[in-house]
Length: 204
Image 1: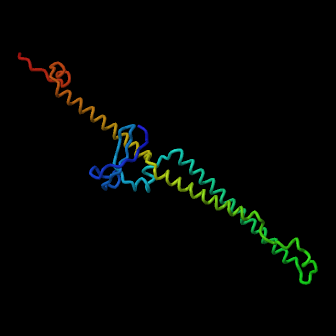
Image 2 (image 1 turned 180 degrees about the vertical axis):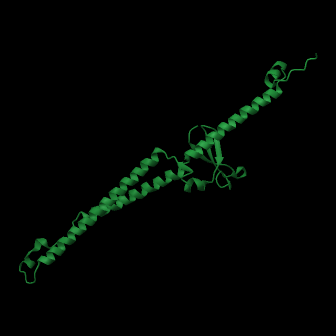
């Protein structure tokens, strides 16, 4: 039996006790490979990682990779933008320190007048806004895939207990069938062989 369980919902009239907290629930985990199933509150699947872990499709990990890549790009752009501003500010402070009152070249030094941040700042700002939109869309897609996931794997100890339970159940059913078959058998020879009746005392 594979450790793969699918979440299903049943009608309210079919609700039963949760395997963990014994409260009534309509949530069922079903294992089609071993015909195993049990009731379990949805909350336990969300907050108890030691009980079960979600099994996500490949699209989830692709979306997660996209979110992480956009996170890195955003951080780099923010650092670069902050660096450009710092460079411009340092240049401005340096020129103010170098300039003196009455310096004749202060009025003639026109090429240094436009002390403003570099023009590429605006495209960088627009690029950050675009990346933020992409990041938001990627996060929404990731959350949507995560919410739609209905497949889980149980904790190894819990899964082994489910496997042993099924084995014991199969053994009990087999023994019960053998008993029923023996009791319904009317062949004298087989009855003697199965139940080993004691020999009839012989008269001397």
